[in-house]
Length: 140
Figure 1 (tube, rainbow, N blue to C red):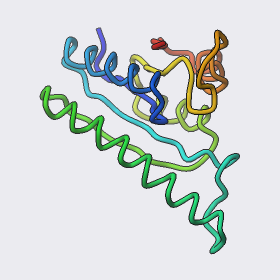
Figure 2: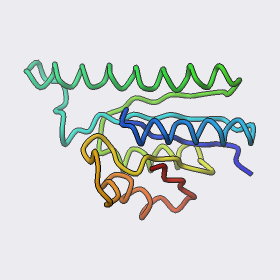
Figure 3: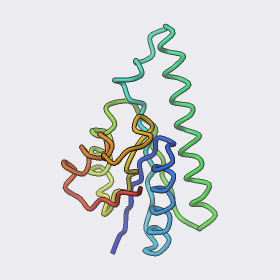
Figure 4: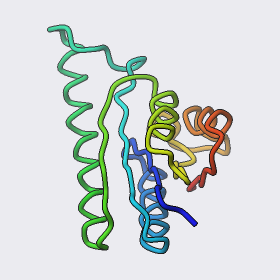
């Protein structure tokens, strides 16, 4: 049913649950798995030799660690995992990457780092669900 699955992570608890669901679906369907982390340019400035540069670099490195964890977990299950660490508006980058890889399923956390709790869906997840035009599994 699924050949290509995309999971987005920001390292939050819900994103980690989304990763678990994405890995389960990829294993069950023998699908390729793509993981994406987006350094939010609304929160972190583009590098320009400033204090913002240090924060941006740290966020990018932390994101790479999150992606490598997905790859490691996928490798243990024999799943082919491709990683993308990029900068931009998270919902736009996720949608663009889903289109690029022609994802059959997107898996996202209900809340991200900026929405640690509550009953309202996170803004990135909400925007992706409303605009992606592909099946989305939201993990809470």
